[in-house]
Image (cartoon, rainbow, N blue to C red; front, side, top):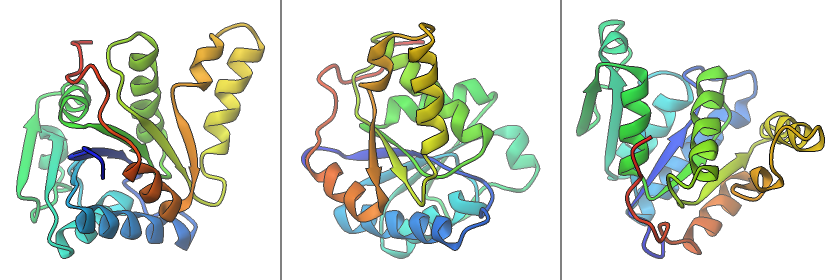
Length: 193
């Protein structure tokens, strides 16, 4: 995949209401493993996160999990992950995930996923990184976020650049194909936020 060694994926810790969500997580995991791309994710064993990690591991791929200690205590950490980083805070988790990734992908998710991807988009707008950001649209899952960004721009509350720093890709096959065309941002490491 053209120089991408690792991908941070943000997604739900729940399975979601549509079977397509779990299928997308598994398909992405299989694709990353087949391409030899390390998964960097939130370290959970449940929901889309767990399905994604399970698929990468089943395919012989490498996984880095980054999870706060309080979630380990809640017994949601994935025991099969080879490289598990335990942080003190959610903020530290996001910083480490961002530093270890060459690009970012959002699968369907809830509020935590939205928090993570909006922060990564904001960091890119602030020139703290120049890494690719892709939203994998699964049955319309990325439309609400895009609508919120578009509304903020239309209302004069966000710069038009907010819509140009990420791409929406329809489904996992197209996402995997797009990842093959990308390389890490020219700036390399993430600046400290």
